[in-house]
Amino acid sequence: MLDDFLKKSAELAAAGERFATATVVRCQAPTSGKPGDKAIVYADGRLWGWIGGGCAQPVVIKEALKCLADGRPRLVRITPSADGSEEGVVDYTMTCHSGGALDIYIEPVLPKPQVVILGRSPVAQTLARLGRAIDYAVSVVAEPLSLEDFGDSAFLASKNFALDGIGVSPQSYLVVSTQGEGDEEALEQALRSNVGYVAFVASKTKSQKVFDYLREKGITEERLKQVRAPAGLDIGAASPQEIAVSILAQIIQVRGAGKAHTTAQPALQAADAKKVRDPVCGMMVNPASARQKSEYQNKSFYFCCVGCKQAFDKAPEKYAVSV
Image (cartoon, rainbow, N blue to C red; front, side):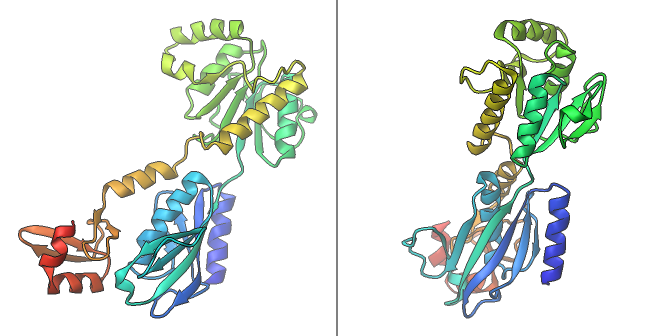
């Protein structure tokens, strides 16, 4: 199991996938999950591996998606007597464990931030080196290219700044630093991508002239408003090196504030929208995948496990009012 887990994790990391790992670190019998059990939660909410039965899995998936959305690990405790009093522990109350408890550590595994630079200006060259120095994945799109000017970065020689060969995503950070060499073409390609962060190295006056051209090309006003121009934080930068520093600082700031788009948050919202509450333990259950179901007074009730269904069937009038 450990070999399979490590292999699967390595494959996902090598492919640049976002995922979370979940490890059982403590249990109190009776539980089906045992210390050392591990699982992987994909960004779309799928679970691979084993960390326990029906009660534990939905909780782990929910917290793993939160983990991917905010980038922070968490320790989750599933117990019949959760009181939320211990700092640093996310408590869930589960009556279906019949006295058992699980502590599960969930940690995000996120790909390196991807910085894509369009252009071969001095600002672009310095930004590429700085990005690599802090272990970001840096790609440069320009034509022609002088590889020694950019350090150990990925390159794509492209006369029209097409991004097809780069593989950008909403989580990428795209910087147009053409500075007179195809400004309009480069920024148009950037804005037609799905990238959330787009910065343009240009003065406000130059930016507005390029924007006028792009409006005629069909770029919407809403999309143009998303461009950060002039690029970078306003720290009084003057030289190409200082401007590059200000841009990288802005990328770090945006990333730290969680303003870049993620795939986890939509998946979390979509998953929550489909769920209903288990009337016995209070856990959220997806009716489409729930194996346990009862009917009472012409209404359907869904359960996370057999224990909750049995408790409901013995006294449905007691639990039906809680939904």
